[in-house]
Length: 68
Image (tube, rainbow, N blue to C red):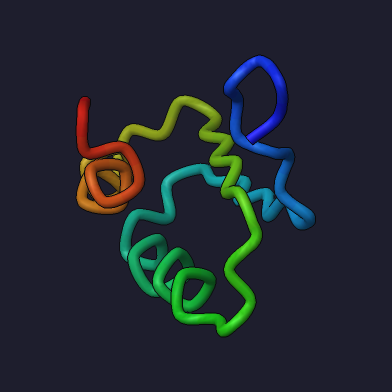
């Protein structure tokens, strides 16, 4: 933690762009989470998908942000 109590900036940012690819999202995110290197953040960009993509990432959101 730094002097203001925030988490340090991760060394790696993984950007996941998406548009209507819900069937691939769980595998895509799980492959990132399963890496031995853990100092990363995931930035998920969705372009108004209509196929349930946001529901597909919900379990991972709860995993990383359990207080939500």
